[in-house]
Length: 142
Image (tube, rainbow, N blue to C red; front, side, top):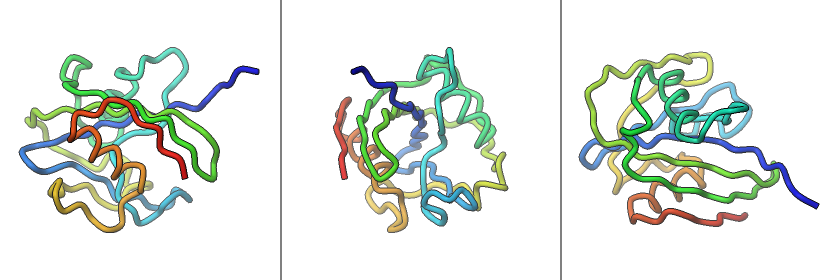
């Protein structure tokens, strides 16, 4: 029997030693925790196109797929089931960051990669660490 896993896409915007993180609110999933810009891939989208769309929708930042310099694929399982995550890394900063979804996001700010906040979604923290170490694929189960 084959599977049809949900796919989520995220962008790591890294400037120097800082990564952009959002604080989730009113989402029913890890509210009050930090995450990366991103959400579900839409039907017909490539993973990079979905990540570009999500960054614009959540932080007002418009990039091109060619701006993505590293990629990470994570096969993930948690209490919600299995899914696939795509993470793309960009590190060229020339935009004004805006909270485009204040109904789902309390704030957006940069954090030091070597001192990430305690309240960060666990698989997001793992993805940041992996992509920082040039790892391109991980299976993350809990």
